Length: 162
Image (cartoon, rainbow, N blue to C red; front, side):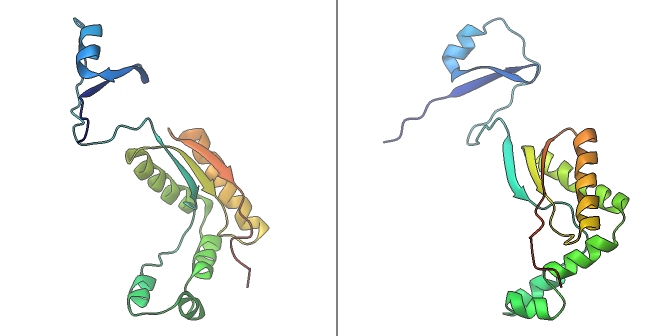
């Protein structure tokens, strides 16, 4: 048999103040007014997701490769047809810093809405000094302007340059 109990979490000013069985918490905070009550029955409550090893700064849509994969193409066949990481590298090199920042910002917002509070952002789609630095500048700019924790990591050997 499973043990089921009703739990409550009390948050104030962005911090967890109490966690415990609902009846105990209800007695502890009797008389308190709450701005919002969220029923999380059947759900999981997490303080925040640390999303490690992401490569969210890139350009170039590789959705066409999905059809190739469904048709049975191997990674090397896709690579030889001009797809794979070198497709992304080429488009990332051509993209302006502003283009990369705009798409990166959109990705970070989606990650934040999904519960990520810290994202490890790797470079790696440059494969040359100029583009890797461009990507790291974009990550640093987001660190300064976005409401999400960002850890930037240089990942220069993501693939072998052509």
